[in-house]
Image 1: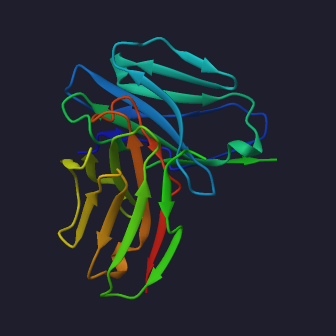
Image 2: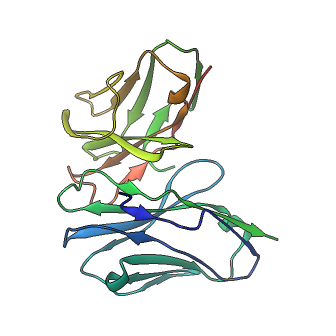
Image 3: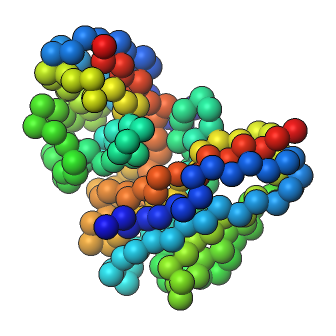
Length: 115
Length: 114
């Protein structure tokens, strides 16, 4: 079974629009960690955020914000006032306390921001 | 620059051949992780080394092997290559033996098997 589901395969928005990328995870651990990574066209994986299972406080970093809801096992990512440079593939990932050595990645959401 | 160095950046080789991918972790990091990113499988964990010892194993084929040397750099060896092995191979590193605090990825090696 897929531990991390990113149901949106591709999203296109016009510049300056807001966009939310969905992430749903599945785990039986009480202690776990969630991550978002960005993969621009150049191919590298860039860390965006880490959240542990005990901290449901939403986080904002500039135009980026994250909404973590344990009740729905979701960790959604919103980009406000999108820009062309935001065009990339975004991955959500899960790391579990018991198997903390590996990340379980979702299949990614490809975001295209149209100028 | 993430601090994790992978070489080469691109590799083209024929089926049946053997290649070695190299990774130097970020300074101070003791763990090295290898991931494979392919179109059909997505990002898959292969193996982790911590301070020279194998720590965790994922979906790594028997044709693949890895090691971490005393200077902490790591090599991923891929043998008897098949067309399906074409992928982007990432190395990542972290300070401790757990990736729970996140790790830093290198820029990847793109392997094309023809």
